[in-house]
Length: 373
Image (cartoon, rainbow, N blue to C red; front, side, top):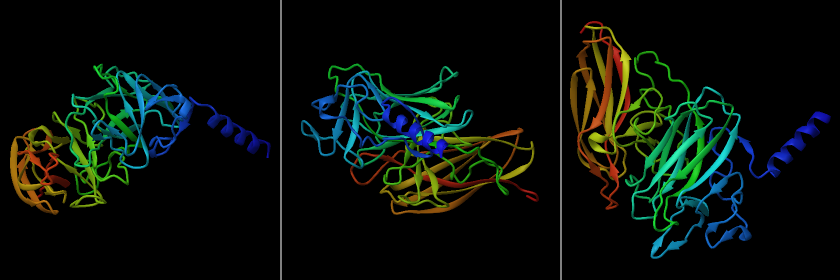
């Protein structure tokens, strides 16, 4: 009984502290949707004046607390779900502490953002402690991939302690200090180490293991390229491109197999790759599905699949209403390591006049040896 009372006291003290470390499981961080907000005395207009006014978060700089339906001039400031979001203005950040993460485990941090200003916007995402000097991301936000006004990003990192601090920072210094991205829905997910299943030499070939997708959003999650994130939140795969690829779910899109797939949303600047051990001189089959996500992405699509020094171009005529076909590339290896790579030849935009980028879907990728070619 005494131990139970002490545990209860500790919980009460924990939540009574403003800037406190919090435990978390896969999903939304405590107050990660910012529905718990400042008191009226802690705000001046929309600007938050107290660094500890937003429960479970610490802020610095020009941070605004935005209510759904609020306008900026003639522009409506969108809030994806619920009633509130935050906007990071000039040199502003939000940060929180999280306990009960597992030291040495890879995690993905997913969050929603929307642009609110005309100039290019960037977001610096980082986790500490961190012994890797380049293990942070400067994510460009000038390109929007969703017609809803919001996009989701996911960033991968290696936890180097059992307690970490997560920070999202707008480094821009602009003439208008209020100018900056809207942020909402911040979630964490532990990533499982992928294994090669029976009958497939590739890891995570069906893309079922990946970043957290918010269940009530319909725009998928952007996975940044390797140049912006050393630890891909898509286990087994590298994003070998200048722009992001989109991770989509069967709840909101057409997925050829299982519950997850990849949409190549930026033409030749949007590519995924994996390196696998092979036997030199042996024949292999690379098999995969190509389709569309049923998201108004129409037109003549073309996927380029690479296996070593062999290329297969797979055309797909999309009506934007879902569907897929299977393709196979047979090749003979010339090295003991083979790079498998996919990209979209063309750029595509949705037919809903939103100007949003889209592209073909790749799923159910399998690599097998051919015994009797």
